[in-house]
Image (cartoon, rainbow over all chains, first blue to last red; front, side, top):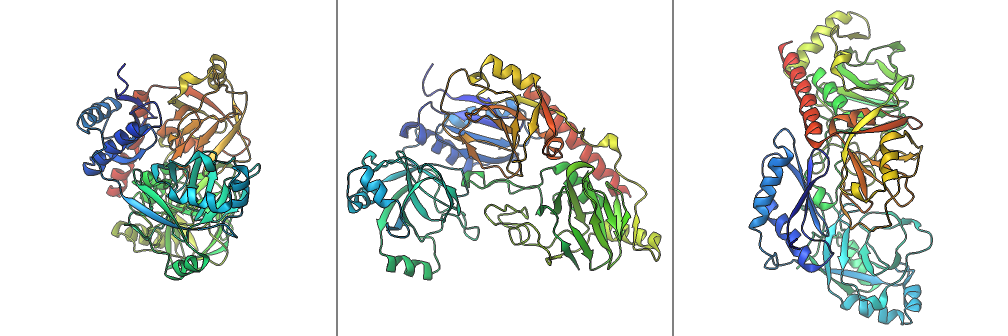
Length: 236
Length: 332
């Protein structure tokens, strides 16, 4: 079987899953992104939503408009024309982070665990480029790929009851940003004053799948200025 | 025109048919757990079927009407009372200003819907009035109702005004009057305690052991106390995989039956997250979600397999019923 072959399967009576690869890698990611872009550009009547993920794109539809077979045909023909997706220019979003201290209580642990100084952890974390593979788990929550394994650290043995929104954490080889106040077991190394999710903004999420994220260290004073400034979305 | 909250009830939220079109941003659909009951309640009071209504859980709130209103209660039988007198579900009811609507608690089902002619005048968030309490968005201040809240009612349709004045005449000097016609039981989804719900095979069905699959389709599973609008945790025989395997997160939806490593399935419901990483053994068919929505913790559920084509046929059948109801009500 051709590795790039499109596999389509139903998810219940109102959704269809397009599998565009088997592994979480950039090639598959770009194909998912290209198909999502095609759907966004040409939404069709009866489509009620879509969810791009690591290797799949799920399309939700109204069974009054389509049968599964009809949806399969439609997606099949759409997928034939998407290309590799690499030509789609990613949006680069810089996220200011106040590392350590009250906002990053686990920075010393991550440093010690990796036999680094806290400053080195910050430098490594802030020098990376991260790909938003998908949005899920919570509104606006990005699954980021590309963290250096030199700062990997296991989850906390028991999760915190409440992690404030904006907290930047590490769990295993992943880094992430909490988009809502929620319980969580990630090692917290800092916090951003940016809101990842705001309903008074369109789109409501700061990040979308396919974006590139860079972290920029800021001081506590800068963090407070950001917050006082209305916590506006910032991107370039 | 307002309704004021005298007692909040166990968990009372404004819901509509959900926040569709935002799944790609990680935003749950939310909306009524039992959309059939919500749509019917709205149609009975002359609203658009997708207007917001109060979703009331188990005990139900106590509400004071601050104006003459036309209401309908559909879904679970929480024993509704107006000024202490029992009123019936699945029909329009005129309620005079000052009357108090209360509930004596569930005798059948888990969630009832209160629709009010004119709808609830709250600002839609991302196109929907549905409350998603985890993010504090939508509905009334993004949260469940609390004592002292006052809910504004919108403008009534012409047909609502007509129905209201007919029933007001019938009420005379009484505090309320029930419509003499109602939605008959034969018209409703097959609500019952300890139901069998129909499912299609989940995306990772083949990952499960023969024993696991057999258990899933032959045994009953109890809805645990840790069940809410996000999902129902089930307890029953273990549903095991052939061998441990990691799934890369992908989309999930209300009705998805996922199985974490402990082998105890979870049925995702209206407020479920948009993606999940547990293998999915089944998907409850859309037409049976209302039945599931009316289950209480402690009840048992069984699963029966149907094809995707059959699931879609059942969906269309249910839609046809609602279309018929709409047509009939328009003639009144």
